[in-house]
Length: 175
Image (tube, rainbow, N blue to C red; front, side):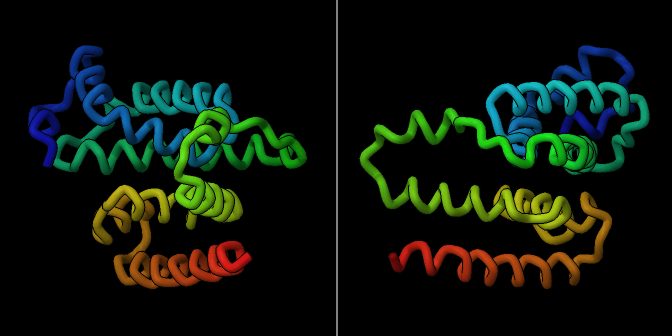
């Protein structure tokens, strides 16, 4: 459990800021998973931070801060995806990371990353969240808690996602 999270609930900005700073990678991972362009990712990261601040007084320090943070962040990300998806269905913004990576020598790795990102973009919000948590090395118990599903459901879904990834990547790498 997070050391800071074991303390009594804080309503002050200092305690919230310290935890947010410590776990800011979660905000960026969720934003990168649920928003396509650089500006959209930045906006979503700010929306997530604002939602975390609004939910902060209700945070239960008996629970892991990072698990709680994932739950809030994923809910904001999924809401963003649902609201934004209809308007942006036909837009394909330039992905700055891929543009910057174009100069790197490891073409095969870049191709695999593009394939994985493309696959993730096709997933429904629940499977996208599940894969994000799995790729972040979260255990089945924590994933189940964050997503509100059973551990056995997590294990089954992860197995199915792995197979779907293999099926998605295999034809592209055999070209």
